[in-house]
Length: 347
Image (cartoon, helix red, strand yellow):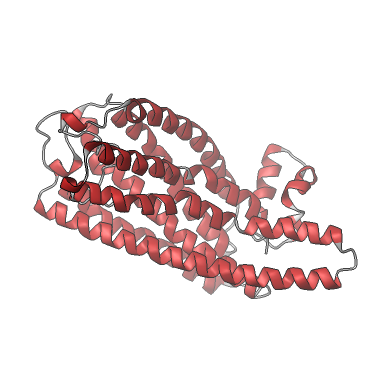
């Protein structure tokens, strides 16, 4: 979460400052971001709706598919929170809708963000395992354990966030209020607990992602060296493998683009909120805009994840091509001829 110890749901409402001399209601907050989130909502809903439709037709026969199905559910839920943020940020929301944003919408946004972060960690572990042990298969017992693990992720984070919904129960005294104004002392304390847990989730998964892709890089380099020295058709095979291997790093790229900037930006932003006397108004506004900008990057996760489905999951591509009545060979140049790989893997 954004790390503001006074508000779990500063997403969408933290900009409603009672300090008129340092108001956050500028054109960036009330116009630019609402327009961007509106576009993101429309495009994201279309892409994720299509992804859901495709995944409903794909059996869960690999760990990767199980994880991707959970990610797409999280993305759909996150996308559905965008209209509430648009109304809140543009100051078009009623007091009742602002309360809903504080109690439900923003909580769901952060819930799905950290669910995605956890599954990105699991996907990275799976890709690493697939790279280091490409011939190790799976069975019904392993698939069942991955489904239980996925359910545990949802249950854990839902249990963590549910008290925030319950404890954000005070009535607002005016139209303009912060989400912290709706919390009692227990709510503020639980919010701090949730923030600390979320930081552990992010930094722990950041370490996992970096470690896994370091191992993947080393293994792919070894594989590339062997192919270069032994392949009879040399150049063409190397090109295909290079493009195929590059696709594997989409998970790493999406993770760093979407989640890393926000969690670095929240540190100075939190300091500007909790140690206000050390920061003048312009600096506070700068850190607020920085936090909102990186939060938008986190929201882009719902738009970029379909790239992972398409480039890394053969069964997703096959079902999509069949649905759209496209010939897979027409896209072979883009995919690096990954159709020869096993289901949902380019490694």
